[in-house]
Image (cartoon, rainbow, N blue to C red; front, side, top):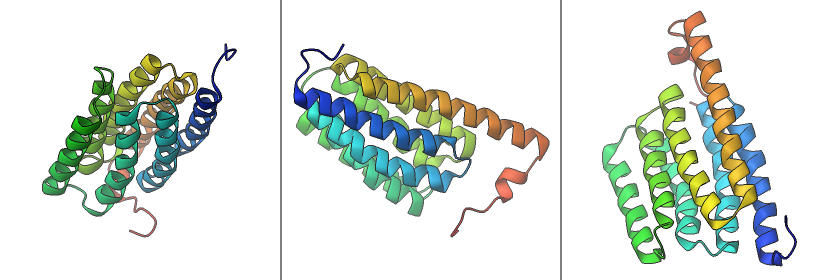
Length: 184
């Protein structure tokens, strides 16, 4: 499968598997705060992977995800900051646009931004699942086996965690709203 692949493309595959590890650990967590911190590490790896594949819109938007995560943690529910983040993403996309494939990265950025700023718990994870699906489509089109696998695993682990959270919510109504994040 990897025969004839350039060293750059092979490096992109390896980096995407590192990102996979961060994503699985993050989405397996029931704590939103831990999820967001691990997503920062994963997005550094994803940005490097996209750069290695020459997918510059996806690489830049992945780096912007890091800033978005930091801002979303500080400005939860702040629609002005969210709109500013969306505007920066759209400007970056316009400046790096190469083909219709870049639309998938833009869709992922929009879904992720809305989810992280405006939602928590299960609704946030559903929106992040939509973002992961868009990233997965991007990875399929650019030929990243590792990136495709990473996003597919993110979807699976994310939905398992959503089920766990839903079960906890049924068993202990109101408990999820009372759980405090460490350092909160």
